[in-house]
Image 1 (cartoon, rainbow, N blue to C red):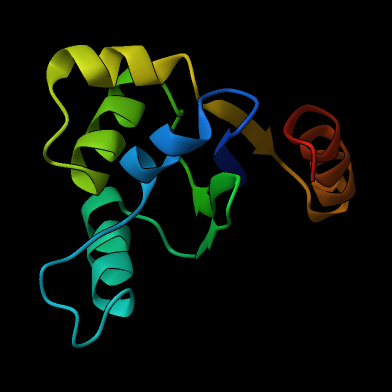
Image 2: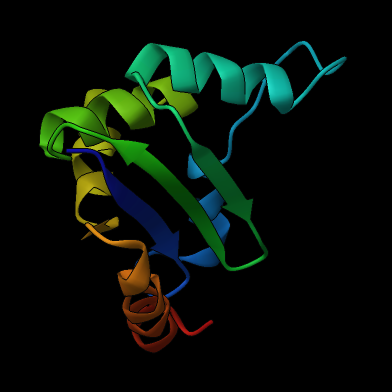
Amino acid sequence: MQAYKVITITHKTTKVNKLKDYLLSDADTSDFPANRLKELKESFGIEELLYLNTCNRVTFFFTHDKKIDNKFLKDLFSFINPNLTKELINLHLSKALVLKVKMLSNIFWCYCFLRFFGDW
């Protein structure tokens, strides 16, 4: 069963100037970020995706039927920022808050959790 997953990195889990490591980027800016988000969805088998990038957080809210483990996060961070070294990727693993929401009614709980821990 697919569930909603949330991966977020905030100013509370890393320094604000390091949030740029989690931003999607693309040399081809003609259709950015749509083209890059499409590649992300196709590469990871994601059907629905919401990408939120603000001054103090980067959040990926999506549906996925597999477990979000360290391998998934490493692959995601490598996709997002191919310039990250393996050492930096391993360091970034501890910076991500990962949530799984099985029912849409639990979105409110998810929001409250992020509000408390992420200072929304």
